Length: 287
Length: 282
Image 1 (cartoon, chains in turn cyan, red):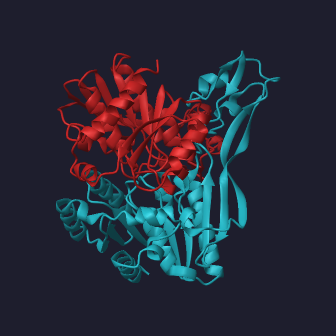
Image 2: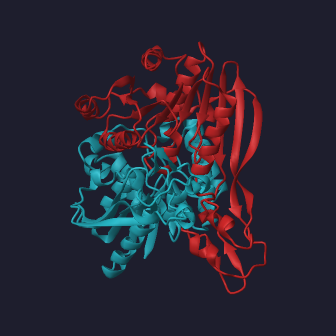
Image 3: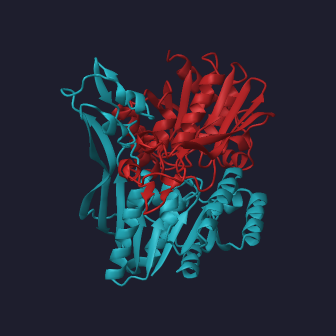
């Protein structure tokens, strides 16, 4: 089984549109995992049926029993997250600030504070329009544990792939270099980095690649909007060569990506010219 | 005034708007631009001016002193699985630690004192009336929130209310975004008129409502996609502050790390609209 993760460092480089196109080309042979749980968009192109929904609980939230509380303020003193304060003369816990560390519950002399498991979002196993399977999620607002939800989705995708004898898991990762990205990279066999020839694109490519290197997995790069800035595209290619990163494809600046998206389609369903050819070639190189 | 520039979806133009708005306003006001996208800070690529301060930022992590009765309380109280109590050793996993101090302060033998561990760097630049502060998370550090919180603190200590303070927030709707916008007066949500843009805008709007934040929308790359973002804002009664035209020349200037407002009157016009809007808020 091969686990391929698509990441980008910078947002908006076309990561999801490209992952969706590759998923479409992979068809029934791939299990798709949308691990960009913060801003999960792939469902807009893959039309999942949301057939199997589960709630995801992770971490804790402190709650206070106002009848037991004597306003001794010990909890306020120990909370490092400014989550506890007085509202209308009563101790109140701000849900968005609470990290669920449980220190307040530990030291409360009246045992007025308890920890509850936190509901952070929903995840789904769906059939998508290719006939393949997609695991995806919707994270609640301001949720803490996106790294854990990413791990959950990946593990589900793996279980499905092994029980249905699928060879490839294709993962849409999130932007950045923080916990959800680390979580999507762990255990992967290959990383595709999508970038664009802008000063930000290069900067973020280098940072995310430093992270990929820590996982010692091979990586390839797709340069999207490659003709936007020839000079920077050249610099990116030099960097790829220096770092031994496979150049998978150079895609042109093309608003057809947006047109396809407006029509709920992947670029390979919508465009039958050069873009489609390039995506097909890319998929042949990767799979 | 403190304004955050945020978006659900990445790559919608947060940095373009932040840097250009900051540059434009600094012709008239004292401005500080703060890059809170600490995982991938990009605003600095568009900023000039000499570095006036650089400091390492630390988070506090417990360290086992190497001797204790192995009572196991530390492992028991840690809700992040950052402490494992073995037969004759306490192991701490710094990347999982949230610096809550529970293990350290509850240890009956004070065997887990807290020590600073470097998580990133803060840099402060100044170019006439435009100051720029960025924080950058070290690669391998997973938690952006503590660094964002410390950057807010730095801004509060160094820039009084006389400054227009513009915060370039990270993308998404999870904890780093909440931390970035928590203490601001107004949030500008940047979106693009596409299905992805609209979907993620809705998530961002829900987040701002949950936080009781005042917010408005700026549509970037206006002209591509469809009108669904506009209809949504109308239905929800959300103000659209500006519409930045979709133009390949803007993308090209951006690609080179150049500011746009002084070269593109259509763009400047939109910044002026935003300026008028935010200065009539108070």
